[in-house]
Image (tube, rainbow, N blue to C red; front, top):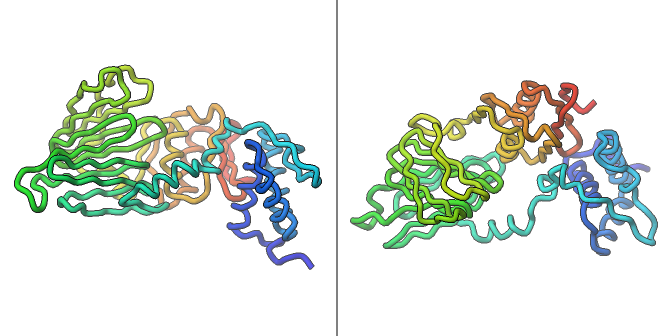
Length: 328
């Protein structure tokens, strides 16, 4: 008798099937992983049904050769070519770097969680969803490493237990932001670091540039983006006005930014991966959305840009084409 889950696949089952489809479409699996997949596939008719349904959906989307996703006999299975253009990192994640981040992190926020922490020196840090920091506070220096995501920093002018405030710096692989005041934001998007100042001043250095000692001084309302290919510090641009960033108040504001970047930010608020395919990644989107409803927010952005949104089991896919909300 078929399992009850065969008729009503759970969210967990859909996520498992999604991962297996993607893993078997990516790089070669070990013999152990192949055996694990075979055992999972045969363990319950619902597993096989969920897997075949998702593989068929990918095939209809025209992104995968469905024949390469079919389970084969005991002699082994041929691996499909990589689906890097599909942004599979959103599905599989970068497991090793993330595990290392978790080990390094002193404070972290979960998916959809905005968390405020008070440091030992009296400074406060508000972490956006799915963000993490490592903290090193000393008499001569206060350094925060932003491991992932973004955070709003409100720096204590007179640290607890001391008379002279030590320099307060936020570091990423691309830049170092040294606080000369109290309120600023640092964010990591892919290989880019973004700094926005809301109060007082922040000195930013590009650690990946040729001149690593050059600094750019940002005042209230200024912002800067430092990328991996910048030969020198880029100029500052207008940022958000004084106060606090919109995400700390439960809103995400997108102003003519690539959909891939907007999707990355929305992805911090949902456990369902968001894939933005092909040219849709570069389409500029604008809007004010509620991250507590990421599916509605994504639908709004896709519709406004004339893109198609497909809701597949365990994930969202946005691509160019006829506007569509729903996977039917």
